[in-house]
Length: 75
Image (cartoon, rainbow, N blue to C red; front, side):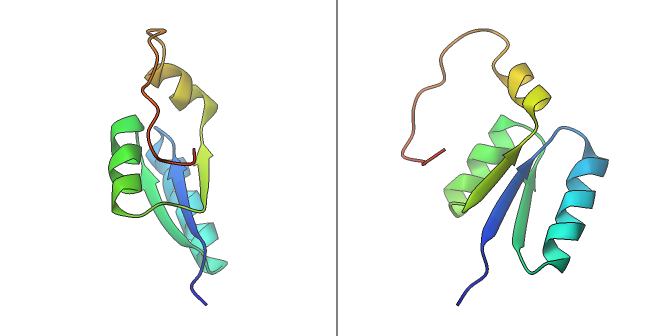
């Protein structure tokens, strides 16, 4: 059985690195992204089982108030 894949989205490199290290040690496959563009690119390569999204990173990505088009992703 393959391990679960987690995508960590955070604009702070230290936090991304720490979460990747901890989760990898627990046996998860971890991909990281610094912003929405990188997260979408990661998702296009392989759909994660779980996304850990920093709330402040998310609010900066959507600060303009415009709607983000829905994709085929479950998140």
